[in-house]
Image (cartoon, rainbow, N blue to C red; front, side, top):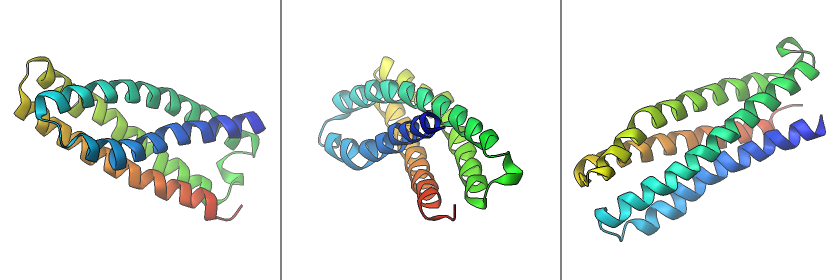
Amino acid sequence: MQVARWLHLLGVVVWVGGMFFAHMALRPSVQALDPPQRLPLLATTLSRFLTWVAVAIVLILGSGAYLIVTYGGFAAVAWPVHAMTGLGVVMVLIYAWLVASPFRLLKAGVAIADWPRAGAAMARVRHLVAVNLVLGIVTITVAALGPR
Protein backbone atom coordinates (compact mmCIF):
# COMPACT_ATOMS: atom_id res chain seq x y z
CA MET A 1 0.00 0.00 0.00
CA GLN A 2 2.92 2.36 0.68
CA VAL A 3 4.16 1.91 -2.89
CA ALA A 4 0.69 2.77 -4.24
CA ARG A 5 0.59 5.96 -2.13
CA TRP A 6 4.08 6.88 -3.33
CA LEU A 7 3.12 6.31 -6.99
CA HIS A 8 -0.03 8.35 -6.47
CA LEU A 9 1.88 11.24 -4.93
CA LEU A 10 4.61 11.01 -7.59
CA GLY A 11 2.00 11.33 -10.34
CA VAL A 12 0.46 14.36 -8.62
CA VAL A 13 3.86 16.03 -8.19
CA VAL A 14 4.71 15.53 -11.86
CA TRP A 15 1.35 16.82 -13.10
CA VAL A 16 0.54 19.68 -10.73
CA GLY A 17 4.17 20.68 -10.22
CA GLY A 18 4.72 20.73 -13.96
CA MET A 19 1.66 22.91 -14.50
CA PHE A 20 2.84 25.30 -11.79
CA PHE A 21 6.27 25.55 -13.41
CA ALA A 22 4.82 26.01 -16.90
CA HIS A 23 2.27 28.62 -15.86
CA MET A 24 4.23 30.56 -13.25
CA ALA A 25 7.83 30.36 -14.54
CA LEU A 26 8.10 29.23 -18.17
CA ARG A 27 5.22 31.24 -19.66
CA PRO A 28 6.25 34.61 -18.19
CA SER A 29 9.89 33.98 -19.12
CA VAL A 30 9.24 33.29 -22.80
CA GLN A 31 6.99 36.34 -23.29
CA ALA A 32 10.08 38.35 -24.26
CA LEU A 33 10.57 36.10 -27.30
CA ASP A 34 8.90 36.81 -30.63
CA PRO A 35 6.22 34.31 -31.76
CA PRO A 36 8.54 32.52 -34.25
CA GLN A 37 10.84 31.63 -31.34
CA ARG A 38 8.34 31.41 -28.49
CA LEU A 39 5.64 29.22 -30.02
CA PRO A 40 7.88 26.40 -31.32
CA LEU A 41 9.65 26.34 -27.95
CA LEU A 42 6.35 26.11 -26.09
CA ALA A 43 4.97 23.48 -28.49
CA THR A 44 8.06 21.29 -28.04
CA THR A 45 8.14 21.78 -24.28
CA LEU A 46 4.42 21.02 -23.96
CA SER A 47 4.76 17.94 -26.13
CA ARG A 48 7.28 16.48 -23.70
CA PHE A 49 5.32 17.61 -20.66
CA LEU A 50 1.99 16.26 -21.91
CA THR A 51 3.61 12.87 -22.51
CA TRP A 52 4.76 12.83 -18.88
CA VAL A 53 1.29 13.90 -17.77
CA ALA A 54 -0.15 10.88 -19.57
CA VAL A 55 2.20 8.67 -17.53
CA ALA A 56 1.24 10.58 -14.37
CA ILE A 57 -2.47 10.08 -15.10
CA VAL A 58 -1.97 6.33 -15.42
CA LEU A 59 -0.08 6.31 -12.10
CA ILE A 60 -2.68 8.45 -10.34
CA LEU A 61 -5.73 6.56 -11.61
CA GLY A 62 -4.18 3.13 -11.16
CA SER A 63 -2.84 3.74 -7.67
CA GLY A 64 -5.98 5.63 -6.64
CA ALA A 65 -8.23 2.77 -7.73
CA TYR A 66 -5.99 0.28 -5.93
CA LEU A 67 -6.06 2.34 -2.73
CA ILE A 68 -9.85 2.75 -2.83
CA VAL A 69 -10.30 -1.00 -3.27
CA THR A 70 -7.78 -1.68 -0.48
CA TYR A 71 -9.71 0.60 1.89
CA GLY A 72 -12.96 -1.23 1.13
CA GLY A 73 -14.35 0.69 -1.84
CA PHE A 74 -16.10 4.03 -2.17
CA ALA A 75 -18.62 3.13 0.53
CA ALA A 76 -15.82 2.83 3.08
CA VAL A 77 -13.80 5.97 2.32
CA ALA A 78 -14.33 9.51 3.61
CA TRP A 79 -15.69 12.37 1.50
CA PRO A 80 -12.24 13.74 0.57
CA VAL A 81 -11.56 10.59 -1.47
CA HIS A 82 -14.83 11.14 -3.35
CA ALA A 83 -13.90 14.80 -3.91
CA MET A 84 -10.39 13.91 -5.08
CA THR A 85 -11.81 11.33 -7.46
CA GLY A 86 -14.36 13.74 -8.93
CA LEU A 87 -11.83 16.56 -9.30
CA GLY A 88 -9.31 14.16 -10.79
CA VAL A 89 -11.78 12.92 -13.39
CA VAL A 90 -12.57 16.52 -14.39
CA MET A 91 -8.82 17.22 -14.66
CA VAL A 92 -8.32 14.17 -16.89
CA LEU A 93 -11.18 15.28 -19.15
CA ILE A 94 -9.68 18.78 -19.43
CA TYR A 95 -6.29 17.23 -20.21
CA ALA A 96 -7.84 15.04 -22.92
CA TRP A 97 -9.56 18.06 -24.48
CA LEU A 98 -6.37 20.13 -24.29
CA VAL A 99 -4.40 17.42 -26.14
CA ALA A 100 -7.13 16.69 -28.69
CA SER A 101 -7.95 20.25 -29.67
CA PRO A 102 -5.91 23.33 -28.72
CA PHE A 103 -2.56 21.55 -28.45
CA ARG A 104 -3.13 19.85 -31.82
CA LEU A 105 -3.96 23.28 -33.31
CA LEU A 106 -0.85 24.78 -31.70
CA LYS A 107 1.37 22.13 -33.31
CA ALA A 108 -0.37 22.56 -36.67
CA GLY A 109 0.04 26.34 -36.55
CA VAL A 110 3.72 26.05 -35.62
CA ALA A 111 4.30 23.48 -38.41
CA ILE A 112 3.17 25.96 -41.08
CA ALA A 113 4.50 29.08 -39.30
CA ASP A 114 0.98 30.49 -38.89
CA TRP A 115 1.83 32.49 -35.77
CA PRO A 116 -1.62 34.06 -35.21
CA ARG A 117 -3.26 30.61 -35.36
CA ALA A 118 -0.59 29.06 -33.14
CA GLY A 119 -0.80 32.00 -30.72
CA ALA A 120 -4.58 31.66 -30.41
CA ALA A 121 -4.23 27.94 -29.76
CA MET A 122 -1.52 28.60 -27.17
CA ALA A 123 -3.83 31.04 -25.38
CA ARG A 124 -6.44 28.25 -25.10
CA VAL A 125 -3.80 25.81 -23.87
CA ARG A 126 -2.68 28.36 -21.26
CA HIS A 127 -6.27 28.85 -20.07
CA LEU A 128 -6.89 25.11 -19.72
CA VAL A 129 -3.59 24.63 -17.87
CA ALA A 130 -4.58 27.44 -15.50
CA VAL A 131 -7.95 25.79 -14.82
CA ASN A 132 -6.32 22.42 -14.22
CA LEU A 133 -3.68 23.99 -12.00
CA VAL A 134 -6.39 25.49 -9.78
CA LEU A 135 -8.26 22.17 -9.70
CA GLY A 136 -5.01 20.38 -8.84
CA ILE A 137 -4.29 22.76 -5.96
CA VAL A 138 -7.85 22.33 -4.67
CA THR A 139 -7.45 18.55 -4.88
CA ILE A 140 -4.17 18.66 -2.95
CA THR A 141 -5.82 20.91 -0.35
CA VAL A 142 -8.69 18.45 0.08
CA ALA A 143 -6.19 15.59 0.43
CA ALA A 144 -4.03 17.42 2.95
CA LEU A 145 -6.71 19.10 5.06
CA GLY A 146 -9.69 16.77 4.77
CA PRO A 147 -10.55 14.30 7.52
CA ARG A 148 -8.88 10.91 7.38
